[in-house]
Length: 321
Ligand SMILES: NC(=O)C1=CN([C@@H]2O[C@H](COP(=O)(O)OP(=O)(O)OC[C@H]3O[C@@H](n4cnc5c(N)ncnc54)[C@H](O)[C@@H]3O)[C@@H](O)[C@H]2O)C=CC1
Ligand SMILES: O=C(CO)COP(=O)(O)O
Image 1 (tube, rainbow, N blue to C red):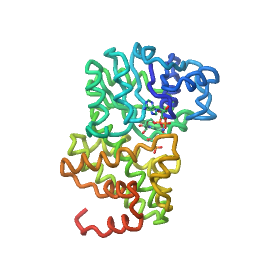
Image 2: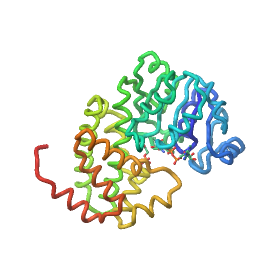
Image 3: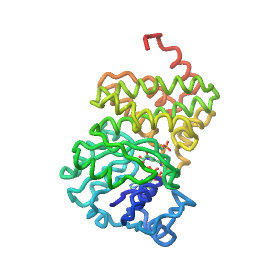
């Protein structure tokens, strides 16, 4: 198995893939990180304090991962196209684990991957999975979506570990839309927490956010039950409930009165919702889907005052649920 991207989530997934005794190749862009992982069996930059399996070998050469039976793709979403373009064509499955929508094209990650590697089956792995918990061996479950049932079954069996339980699905679009949209909603929930607006407001936002995710997902061809499953509602609840989420934490900072631009400039790790929000807003407008919470997050990211944005959201015309 190969893993492309050695941030927190790529490193945690390499641990999962090594859990049943197989060798794993982990590609990182940064040569210093490759050497550090191979020397110390720890990714001190992105997942400090967690010993990595000796079955994991880091590499800086994409040709070394291309031959693997399958590759987990775990780069930031906006970097995925460029990295896949450098990956030699091999026809083996690509399992997409990044959560986002491509800026400029509005393409989902599966559409980008299929365009760059037309001979590879493209799957999506998504669900409630804070990397540090998964890497420490704490239990969770994910959706593994594949258009081809046989490929999905084989990879579900390959990835499953006692603490990591993949559920097979054939709804690739549904699985990826849940993960992309929940990051934007998590920023909004963080703003509610940071501004001290209370637990009722947070729960209301999760429910109305889920309605928003469902409207967009259905319009894009997702199935409602996928959106209500691990990769949609499951991940939404996780990410909207914890400061362990980078998106939620970003929102908390904004809600507490800090400027989004300053918060983003000071981060080393990715807060995907900040990149996804304007793309999602434009993609939704283009197909006539109303997404008021996403619109509000975009205003907050652009620097509008929290009080004004929340006020405008609450002043929307009353309507049926
Ligand atoms: N951390 C988590 O708990 C989870 C993250 N994800 C998703 O996985 C994806 C990756 O997230 P993390 O591993 O957490 O990110 P991270 O912030 O921990 O690390 C990002 C990694 O990508 C590399 N990188 C940055 N720009 C790049 C570029 N232009 N080309 C190639 N590599 C580049 C960095 O060097 C670093 O190794 C995101 O889409 C995220 O939403 C999904 C589930 C859980
Ligand atoms: O996707 C995640 C958990 O499933 C991680 O969320 P954050 O990117 O907000 O930390």
